[in-house]
Image (cartoon, rainbow, N blue to C red; front, side):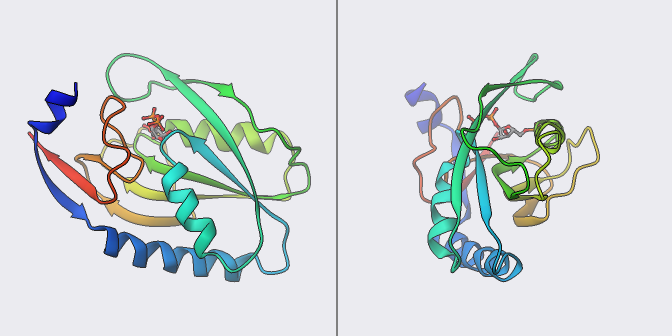
Length: 178
Ligand code: PRP
């Protein structure tokens, strides 16, 4: 598989510098919006870990963090709506301000499911921050509260985003060319 991705055409879509500037803007907005609040960021593994690490270090307010792992079942590379938690958060969230952090929203099914499932635990508030909003394949109405970048469609890797578990480590985001 290493062989495969190395031989695919790819071009930088968002450079590390552009990403850094955008993350700083998001972090400033979040810090402003959650002043004097007790914020918990919940990252969705695996893809979100790079974005979340940069985001919290650029924020100017304290926060706590936790993680979930969500699995979707279905054919192909898009989720089909059957989503389960395979690793849950480890801290109670009732009455807390929650910000979910994701690398990408595509069909919207994963985050729709997760937001609804967290609401049942009665947090004080719940919002979503996504690094990349990919809009063409939406299967449900879903709008994130904070968005790093928006694209219509395309296969992207790097900055946490993978192709068959490869390329998450790349500091820039690449568009794979067919
Ligand atoms: C990606 C992403 C979201 C989901 C978005 O996860 O991190 O969880 O797909 O897709 P959707 O909007 O169509 O539901 P993936 O299954 O690739 O796992 P990963 O984070 O481990 O890469």
